[in-house]
Amino acid sequence: MSTNIQLVVFDMAGTTIQDHNEVESCFNQAMEQTGLITTHDEINAMMGWSKISVFDTLWRKKCPQLSEEEIDALISNSYSKFKVILENHYRTQEVNPTEGTLELFSFLKERGVKIALTTGFYREVTDIILSRLGWDTDFDFHHCGNKLINVSMASDEVRLGRPAPYMLFRAMEYCGVTDVKKVVKIGDTPSDLAEGKNAGCLYSCGITNGTHTEAELSNYDNDGLFKNMYDFKAFLETVL
Image (cartoon, rainbow, N blue to C red; front, side, top):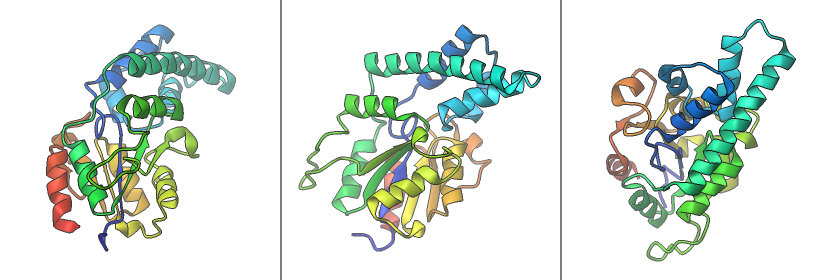
């Protein structure tokens, strides 16, 4: 096992799971149904956040004059509609890993490095995705006949989702990793980069074939931006 890296923490949608703007589309459908007007840039800036936090932020921005009770009702209505749309999408549409992800997972498992997922999704939809992919069952990569991932953490299982580091810390706790400088984080959003930086990870890296481009992610503090999982794997090969 690597003496330097014990755990790699991955985002889900847009990083390890293909996302061709489907999550943004689900947001747009829920917002259209509930009268919440927004823009692509506003939604994209909050990708990776807990999903209810997106509606909370947008409704408070749009209607600052409303009472707390009125705002809460608007947030709850939009979020409820979004959950129905999102869960239906992941139950009925194709769910596929991003190119190179399974090869990278195999590479890490063969070297005894643990694998965690953190996500802005809530637990129910996280489990739908893991089940559709078969990542919640036993895999057999050569002689690594155990769970493909060691743990997944959803945003509704901590007090604050990204960019707060709490999901990452919970993943460390579950995996028995005590030194954050033996953890690497990667994701496709600014909030992923911030999660890794706020946690103090050895490396906090970005993947640029998800929701944000290299030009967009380069504006945020990072330890490397990679075009795909193959390039990220090549980087890890130099540090493991």
